[in-house]
Length: 262
Ligand SMILES: [Zn+2]
Image (cartoon, rainbow, N blue to C red):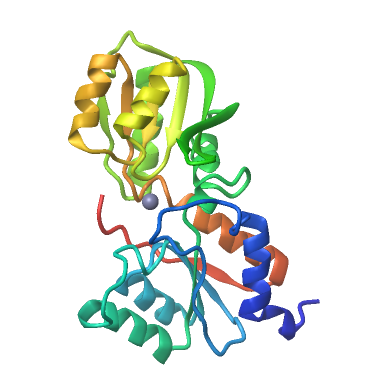
């Protein structure tokens, strides 16, 4: 039986921090993992979304949710005054007693509920080891397979379309085969990840997005890159957290789709 006192923000946040190893995982400065905004509570309904934005906050309000769990939190842009659209986000959260919990890299790399592992599973790929080094952690995953790269691209295309993305490919030719792949969701393509891919004999890199120069470098390195869409590669982790909270606390949840951006 679910007891109401178990559904406080503190209990749920402690559960998530433990699951995601929030205090141990390094991250970018603006990520601010964990509770970003408190509420009076208790938690009655949970909304999950990729971004903390006016649209997803509005979606949470419409769903009657008072906890919003996101992958990209409210503070990416660093210190800034609460004015204009930034103020509007906070005003709506407080007016509707909505708490915000954010998890960036801890959610990307989690072995069960992480974006990278779940994306691999969606594509029929079995991760064997880590990829995408950041400080002391591997954000992504890699593994071996024997697939026509065009087949892998087709799976990515279907997934991307389903998750409001748009697949862009580099180096996918009809006769090419993928024998070692790596995944790094979100902004996963960079000179660093391409270098790491080359060193690990990865022939196909699957990412959310990357700057233009990564396509040029990939071609020169002989690595195929499948750019699935930043948003499209990061819808899985927050949905897994919603399901996990329902399982552990009996709290209903919904995914707020808001595919703004790339
Ligand atoms: Zn991201």
